[in-house]
Image 1 (tube, rainbow, N blue to C red):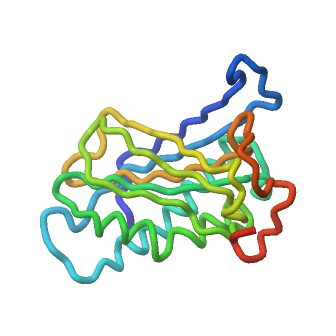
Image 2: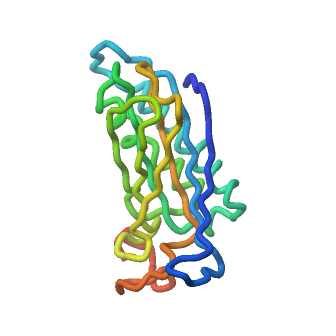
Length: 193
């Protein structure tokens, strides 16, 4: 069972951009869990425990984001994931959480999710910023949804912890105008278009 010290959920809502009213506002939610790193301070070959933690957090944090936005799962438009490992851990601990098993439960939380979930991982210390990249959940070529959100917790991650974040949006960037496939045109069959 994952030892979670703290969960935080943050909503960012953009109402005005470049002096223009954004109606409806663009909204992003990021949910963060600060967990104990069971492998802090030692090398371990088998990272299955952290992989299983990824599955647990993909569901929990994805659902928290959807709830925070007050939308139905199918209304989610983009997503992303990220992890920051405290100084007694290693980057592979973040990879174990983010890659093998986190994606499927996150996709269930946002209904579908044909595209790869953008991700980042880093080593860090309390109060350091963690960037969560964002991309369209069903079609990676939807440029209006290339974005990100940052999160910082003043007391995480501690040396023996991992800070794990999942972000979900109900829209793309405000005032997108770099062309390409639009959200309305996306088919979500191959994860690209």
